[in-house]
Amino acid sequence: MSGELKPKNIFLLAGQSNMAGRGGVYNNTKTNLLKWDGKVPPQCTPTPNILTLSLNKTWEIAREPLHKEIDNLKTCGVGPGMPFSNQILAKCPNFEAIGLVPCAIGGTKIEKWQKDTNLYNQLVDRARAARQSSGGNIRALLWYQGESDCDEWDSRLYKGRLEKFFNNVRQDLDYPDLPILMVVASTGEGKFLRSVRDAQLNINLKNVVHVDSMGSTYLADHLHLDTMSAVRIGQKLADSFLDNFYH
Image (cartoon, rainbow, N blue to C red; front, side):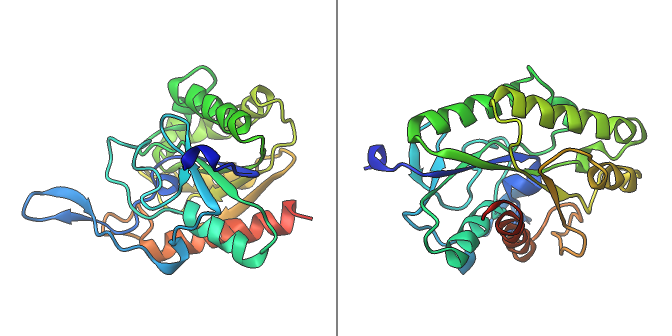
């Protein structure tokens, strides 16, 4: 079955935990381990028109938790990828099948995404495999990261590192105008969230648009979006894609 599934529209999902999805993850007090509550909101309903590139690079029907195979050292829950896809299909019924390429890994600094790192290579490798195996086009990179760069030193270097990362991905995918939908962080591990937000808001590259996560609601850790906000950010990303890059 999965051999026949071929998406026309590919979206890359990268960054850290809020892109991977932590909606519905809670601390089981008996075991003191994190668990996902298993609740899938209607905006995250699986459909044959939303596929995901599995770890072994085959296309399968996408379902929550979308990053379970990729961000496998953490407990994944609901993230923005499924509501993003469902929102696009709801607003544009003629939009052909979507192929999501999950690559986000929790707790990763921008330094870990620089060219020739494992995460960078995995992203580029999976993106190329997705394009090759489907014959579809990469439509955008969805990026949500920065919470781990909120200390003084990393926040100062953030803008340069982020621009370099975006430029390198575009170069290695041979797609200089690749649309990038960047979520602006609203929580951070450290005192310099404002510096990271400023860096994100002032990125001066073509075809990079912002979606601000400020005003979200969070899990008890005050770092991770809850299910409702993961859905809201996914929908805002979809609206941003349609407004800016779909004509």
